[in-house]
Image (cartoon, rainbow, N blue to C red; front, side, top):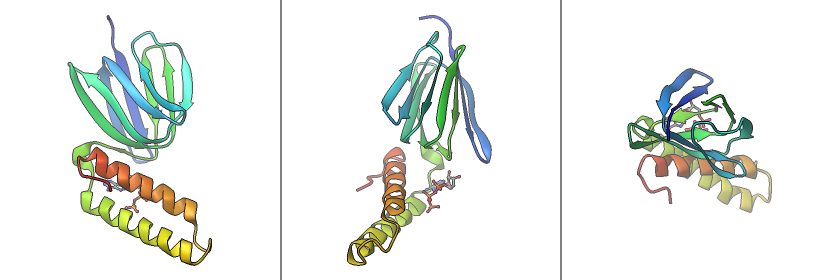
Amino acid sequence: MTGKLTLRVITPDRIVLDIQAETVRVPAVDGSMGFLPRHAQLVAALDVGLLSWREGGKEQTLFVSGGFVEVKQDTVRVVSEAGERPADIDVARARAAEKRARERLDHSREASGQIDTLRAELALRRAVLRLRASGQSGS
Ligand code: ATP
């Protein structure tokens, strides 16, 4: 394999990554998608999950939360609500978010749909995947 991909990850408050990578894998809503240099042009929606890339032969990961990926001319551009390296993840915050979401879901069962169940389920997924990304068990 020759050539590299430029990987840029942007969130509402910062440029999280602007690097050269040998391979990139993203959590698309239709499943995991992997890219090598010279990949065909595409745009896809992203799920919550782990983006990974190989840089200098080393595999690295980033938690991302929705958004889009665009692949064009050996550049992978990701725009997401969040982009956190494992070391950036505040484990106590993620645990608190998990607990809060589980309590809301328990409550929502008792209150039969009074509480926004979907919102709580999405918050729970983010928390569990953040804990997994940080190397802590999510459940
Ligand atoms: P919380 O309820 O704790 O705010 P959340 O899942 O609702 O969690 P998001 O809306 O996904 O939070 O993210 C809002 C901002 O906070 C983003 O910039 C995101 O990177 C950051 N963030 C959220 N949770 C964490 C965490 N556990 N560690 C580091 N950054 C976090």
